[in-house]
Length: 157
Image 1 (cartoon, one colour):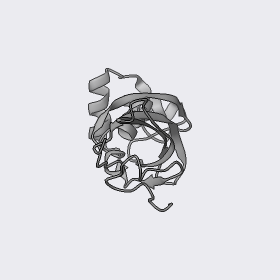
Image 2 (cartoon, one colour):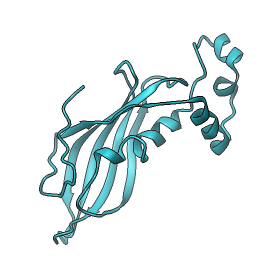
Image 3 (cartoon, one colour):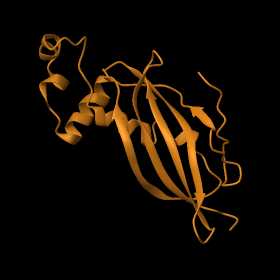
């Protein structure tokens, strides 16, 4: 895995395009999978019927793809990598999110975050950061990917 270069307690001035960090791992448990299906109502047999999954040629229960998105952008994997000295204003959206491979119960997920853009707002008091998020499984294979955008307030402005 690569070296973590996104500075902890970053500011607009210390954050640079091209900086990358990789999260620690998080294994998707049966409990995670079941709670997510309960939350979303996504009880398709490919997610909850082992025999159906086997007949479909899978080695295990397929996890809903949106769980990968939630794990990537939620507090589980990304939050420890994006600790800022500046207050977060809010998330501005996700674009170009692509599913590249499956997630199964028992997979251990990591994310790689790369800063791909940063811009000051017109008043100079806030800034927008675009991050390339790549969700990786335990084999280091990219299974999801997209761009997340957020806004931060400059504490010193």
